[in-house]
Length: 238
Image (cartoon, rainbow, N blue to C red):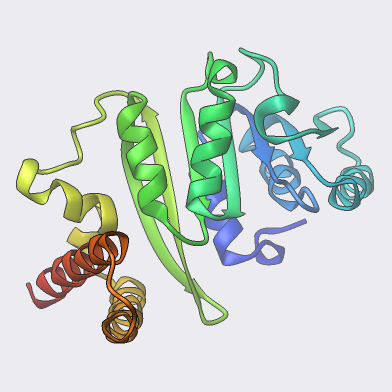
């Protein structure tokens, strides 16, 4: 297995793993990420966790084919159920929704003992993860945004530290939670493309909301979308 065989998305996640780590890859699918990390000498050992039997069997097959059974354990279970406290020092979760990733971390909080780094790649709603990190004493230390096969992905890295460090004052706080404090400084092409598309969708939703029967919940949602649009337009025009 070489670096070219790993998707750009998973390669970006793998390269954020500290050398010598004991990792747990949650929702590991075919176990490509742990196999790559161990084979390349990035990770010392790995646990590949899967909740569904099909991907679990695929992961077992991949680990066996790579002759890494002594270094990588494939386990069937939900979220962080597959690890014991203190067993790993780095956790990767890639390819799920941000709200689901936050729920996995919240439900398995007692398993984070001894974990020094989280590397999280949400497909949507990275804000849910940033909020969870902030509320649970994790410091967001790096963010990357990449485009692959027409899709845009955000990769968030967090370490034990000062949760408020990456965020500006109260006024800019919500903007940074939505857009990412590091990403909104870099504003690369993938970032601009993602948020222009999001803005266009939000404006379309707002337009449809105007035709719907008004309610308090609807008005709250409209206000949230208008705030988000304002945040994005301010950052993109800076």
